[in-house]
Length: 223
Image (cartoon, rainbow, N blue to C red; front, side, top):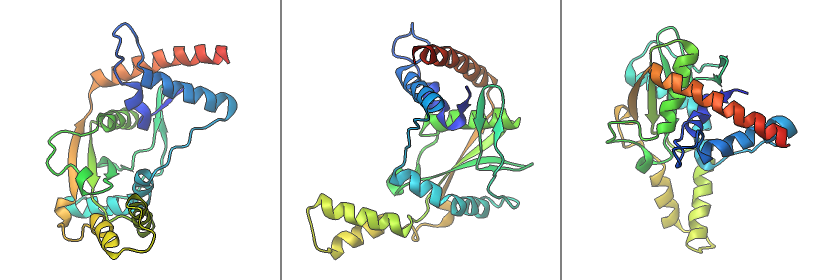
C-alpha cells in the first residue's frame, strides 16, 4: 500500500489524542483505500472546484510560464513512485518542479498570503520533492477565468438560491463578473510559494505511511 502525494495532508493530520498514532482523518482515508483495493469500491470525489482545476490546468501552466518568464514548460505525464508514496507533479523538467492550483474565485485566491494557505499542498510538494530528488519546488496559485459550462451551473445555482425561475439578468451579470478576471493584470493572477525539501518532514511521512500500513493490514483482516 502506497499513499498518493495528493493525500499526504490527510495522512499527516495530527491526531486529537496524543496517544494515537493516526488521526481520524487518516484512518478514514485508509478505510477508503481498503474498500477500494479489496472490493473495488472507489470513493469518487468531484465538485465544481475540482472540475475547474482540471479544466484550467493547461491554461494555468501557460500563465505561470509567461508570468515567471520560465524556459518552456509543459504538463508532466510521468508518474513517480518509491516504496512509500506515488505522485504525478504538474510540471517536472530538468530545471524546475512546480504544481499549479486554480482558485475558484477571487476571494479564494491568496492575494495577501505570505505562507501557503493550505497545509495539504505543502505535504503534497514534499512528496514530489522526495519522488523526484529535487531540492525545491514552486506552488503556484492561479486565477483563471472559470469555464463557461461551470459559470452556467453557477448561474442556475444562484437562481435556485433566490427562488427565481425565469432568467434574471442581474443574477447572470453578478455571477459572470464573479468568475471573470480580465481586469486583473496577469502578474497579479499568479501567486508563488517556494517549498524547500525538508528531510525531517520526509522522514515523518515515512513513519506515518508505516503506521498507516499497520492499520491497513488490520482492516484487511477484519474484512
